Structure formats: C-alpha cells, structure tokens
Image 1: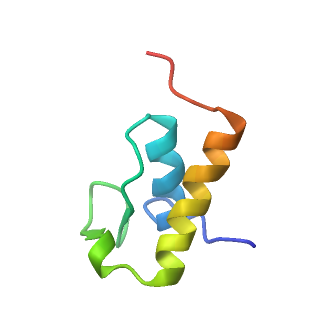
Image 2: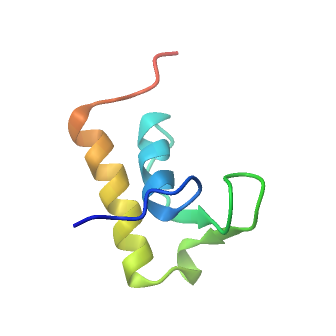
Length: 68
C-alpha cells in the first residue's frame, strides 16, 4: 500500500520514531513536524494509525537508525 509520506504525517512520524529509536508512539502533526498541532493516537483514525505503523515497521525492517 502507498502512504502519504508528507513531512509531519503519520507515515513520516512512524519512520522518524524508528530512526531515532524513540519507540512506537503513534502520532502526527497537522503540518510540519514540531511547528504545528500534534495529533495523538487517541485522536487518529484507523488509517492514520496504520500509516504510522507502516512507516515505523518499514524503517525497522531495513535497520536504518541514527548512530549517536
């Protein structure tokens, strides 16, 4: 499935959380990350939560993590 990968969206945030090893915490932003309203898991639709999961799992599957 193809997900909207816009900066701040659910798919993008899932991938970013995996990349930075922040753990699985579904959320997204209405606009750019940090610069707009954050939408928590409790307010996300099933499709938005699935997009977050897909972004997170895709990044986990390739093992692309920030090296500190």
